[in-house]
Length: 183
Ligand code: M6P
Ligand code: ZN
Image 1 (cartoon, rainbow, N blue to C red):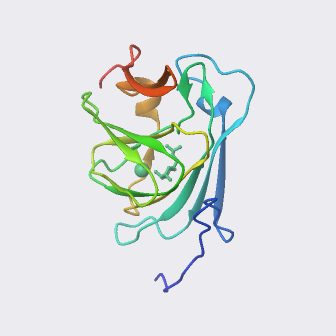
Image 2 (image 1 turned 180 degrees about the vertical axis):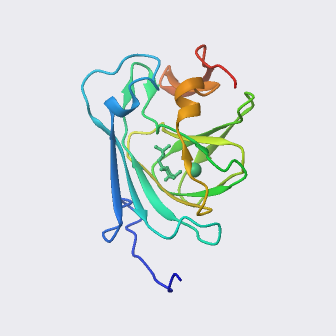
């Protein structure tokens, strides 16, 4: 049985000093996600996770620190995933920086919401989610989800997202992803 606990989070940097898992993803981990092939192997983001049991009765949580950058004209982004248990929902809370949360269903509907300090995003079950840093600073946000959700990366690897976020005349623009294939 999980006992009550608290963990400090540095909401400016996103660091959780007592995180159980710190995951780092580099350009090579996202090679096929971008329209263009990335140069080099820079860190794109870090995830600080606090472990609780992977049960429907628990709520795993953590922070993501998504660095600023682009591959060609496409902003740095997370891999993105569906939940293995499709019905499981998730919330995000923006801590610092500015970005967009892309969401998509397997049959190709999509939604785009802002991630920014003080804003909560609700990701319903059945919607894949990917965050995109559209600003000059790291995008830092908190996430919490139903414990037995699981991460399905394969569907996104195979199908892609219906849209991409690119820079056009200095501004973020949402464009169709020609490579998207609905399930
Ligand atoms: C958020 C949550 C995590 C996820 C992380 C990085 O913090 O959704 O579950 O791991 O973003 O995204 P991804 O797993 O798609 O790389
Ligand atoms: Zn998720």
